Length: 192
Image (cartoon, rainbow, N blue to C red; front, side, top):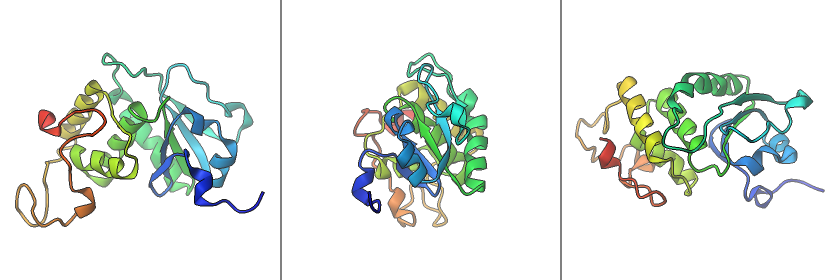
């Protein structure tokens, strides 16, 4: 068909970090796009959706059987998901983190990874993802689990070398928080 162009990827997951992609169920079944982006690891954060290419031997899967519901404990899977993502990235291949819509569960896993690996606060990790993919809205319970994870990691909001809290130097201007998710209506002040 010819060379791939950026227009070919409309609707494909967003690359959050090198080799780390955030997407939805449709993305997980698009073999051409998975191959084009060198994705070989897939985290399926759904209880019901199949691991489409599991039998092919071309992809390594991790299944997190969690529904997008307030009663679900997604945080218990953070360590395994972080290790799985690290393994893919260390091997120089892509990893897709997906749920049904790519808005809540997969975003929660991706934000947790950024908090752990990049030492970002919840607010900064959330904003970093939101800048790359505007339609994100983890459910209220998952946001609470991320807040608890932030405390476990001893990440302090507004940490900066300038010494001011909140930081006024804009050292990390691309992470400048907006204080709220436009999609979910959740204000971060509720979690601070």
